[in-house]
Every structure is written in structure tokens, then in C-alpha cells.
Length: 381
Image: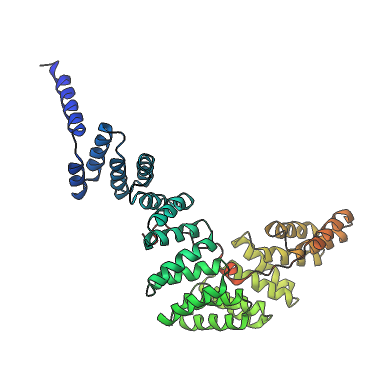
């Protein structure tokens, strides 16, 4: 008896292996329907061991693994299925979705393209392809996908809003305006739609109309994040500095750590020739956010005026690092070097100013929105 126990274990293992080896597709499907995903996966794996060239079994294994949220393994199974049978229906869409759910938006694009080519009427494939382009910041390519999908489902407010935002990031401002108008017709009290419409109008250089949209948003939702900052920025851009300062303070009353509001308040104080008030505001902004170009530029300009060149130069160099294509920081740094007697370095900075042929003016969409919102992998499955 003492030596028989290991033998019983071996027999049990062999019986278990045989049971899996004899698994049928019907049994695997039954296990899946019962929610026994681990057992269903084992059954499909057993079927694959019996016939390693069974493309359908690999595809079914992928479905079970995806249901279990094992998306990386599911993607591998789908790719094996496609290698064996590239025309297997539905597998390209499932592969794209498995990559999409992992946030692998670049990898999701080819299978979604293939799925759409196989079925041009598939709104799911078109929407997911559009969101995959969005996830890789290929906004111009995302727009037509989402436009077609939105036209086929005009009452889908969420999809229309996503299209409008995509148009905005693609700098297709007319498209964005039309979509936001449609959103506002269905939901006139949408503060976010008013704000985004204002960003689109600002992109079209229609600043007064943009101000009106932000004013509408502030009336509807005065505590909406960025609503007062966005309005303040538009006033600042229009050189209405008193109104701008009022709005920046209103933003800070809701969010005391809004770094850009502190920075622009500091800029306004500098423009009012009040360096004593400007410096602590600019330094606070930099403590909160270390990539605010305007704060470093203004800080460097004030310190240079005060002949504190050892502090001014690093601030101006940081401003240049954040955007080397803007001429103002190069010019101010050149003047600082000149005052310090570092003439060759000054001339090099002035030469850079002459090389810069354009003055870029940031549009509001990038000022208050930063990078476009990331996809979560849950969009429009």
C-alpha cells in the first residue's frame, strides 16, 4: 500500500490528460456558455493539441481568453488563427479589439482596417478604427472614420462629441464647430460643448465669438474646471488684462493649484510694471508646474531687468528649452549676455532670432486642454 499512492496519482493525471485530449468543440462551447472560462480554455487547448492546424479552435480559444480579460493571450491566439486561415470571419475585428483593450492602439489599426475592408458596413470596426487613430494622435485620419459612423447614428450624442473633439485636435475647426452646434442643439446646457466650441472659434481666430462661448459656459457651470481660465486666456489674448485677471482669480478660487492661472496673473503684473507682485506669482506657478514657458520667460525678463543675471540666464534657457522656435526668449537671453559682456553668445542668440521666420501663437485648445485625453480601451466596443 505504501508504494501504491504515487501510482494512483499518475493514473489520475493520465486520465485527466486523456479527458482533455478527447474534448470536443461542443463541450468547449458548453463550458464557455456556463461561464467556466478556464475550463473552456483548457478544452480548446486540448482540441488544438489534437489538431494544431485548427484555425477555428485558435479563434475560439481567443474568444474565451478575451472574455476572461486575458487580452495579450487572446491576441496571440487570434494571430495563430489568422496565420492558418487569413479569411476566417470576425477574427480580425476580435484581434483589433484585443489590442485596443490593452491600449496597443497602433497594433489595433491593421486588424481594424482589414475588418472594415471585409465588411464596409461594420460601424463597430469603423468606430474602433477611428478611436485607434485618435489613440495614436493621427487625428486627421480619425475624422473621416468617426464622421461616417456619426452620420449613420445621428442621435448618438457621445459619438458626435467625440467626433467634434477629434476635429478640434486635427485643427479642422469648421468640422468641430458644426459638430458642437449639433451637440448644443441636443444639449444646450452642456458647458463642455460651449468651451470646446470656444476653442474651435479661437482656432479660427474668432476670439470675440470664442469669448461669448466661454461666457455661456461660465453661466451654465461656473465651477467647471478651466472655464474661467479659458475665458481669462481669451481676454489676455485680446489685451483685456483687467478682465483676464478677474477670470484667473475666479479659476483660482475653485482650484488654488491651477499653475497656469498663477503664471498669467504674474504676467499681467509684469505688464503693469509691478515686478514685486509678479515674481512670487511666477515662482509659485513654476513650483506647481515645471513646464510653463511663459513663467520662465517672464521670470527671466524681470531678473535681467534687476541685473540678477545668474538667475535670469537659467530661467531664459529653460524657456528656450520648452519652445526653441519662439524668438522672444532668444532675444531676452541675447540682451542679458550683452549686458554681461558675453558678446559672442549674445550675437549667437540674436542670430537665432533672425532665423526664426514665424511667430507661433498658441491656440486655446492646446493652452487649456494640454495633450488630448487618452483612450481607456473601453470606447465603443
